[in-house]
Length: 169
Length: 197
Image 1: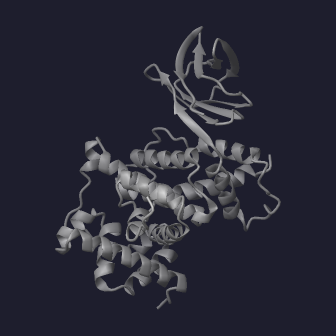
Image 2: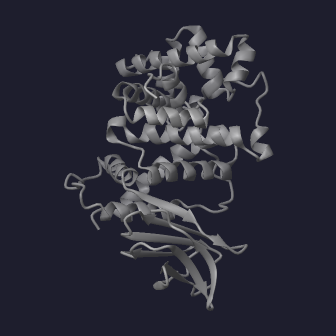
Image 3: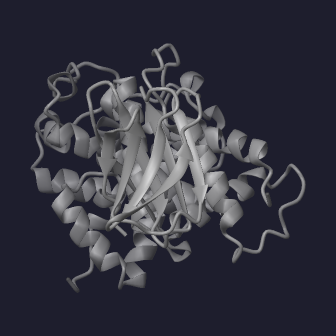
């Protein structure tokens, strides 16, 4: 066999941990998270939808898994998945000490700090605070369209900041 | 659809587009390099954000997991992908690169899967390449000695017995294509399903 299978499995599981965390963050249910990861990978593999010119593979897979998990919540018949709600005062901060990758988490926090407050607020509420975009709009008293455009603009700006390398302070 | 994605590129990368819209976006991405680049940039930021998430708690009981099977299937597919140049695979430092090569091989290999129709308590999945080069059957709750049979019209071919693992598995090279996979035990068909090539 051309491949060191043990090494492959080790590294494969390393990716699986990240993918599971992404799904679990949305679903809060380990079994549902496993299913979401499984479905997303099967969808990718059977569809042959990945091409190298789409960028690196891991970010692509992470995006697929998150999309699958959010689709599961949106279309779920499983009541407990639909009822995962957050209290209005739930923290929306990054806990670097509990992060999968504390160093990258710190880099992200520093990069977020460089964003205009409106963009940072929308990203942290939506991504780290587990709000739907509608909930973010309600909490922040903004039109849904504004939430979407701030989220998109914030992500583009984050890309620039992260590409340049957020200076550690 | 020819219109560029605009803000939907970032919303899609974060999973905030409905499935129907996502499918439209994917169709557009197949034809638009500029939007591909924009989505890839947004996905790389989303991947960085995910590094700040906590890991999934490990305490959950292992109801069932397909990871070991998928990993094995992935390794098998990788080994079978002779078109890939793997000469650079050396040393420990490029382990992640190797994984990406293997996953890329998988992602660009045309294989499919089907869940077979079966009696209660029995779950069978068949993962198979669309050109009939291999099939990997994974079964939970199958009786000892159950066989996998590939039917093609009136002809049938016994592919062999599932092993006694939990779940039980069988990997077959060159099964060819067929109309239906059957799981047979004691002379009875206990599960069946059609591959879609």
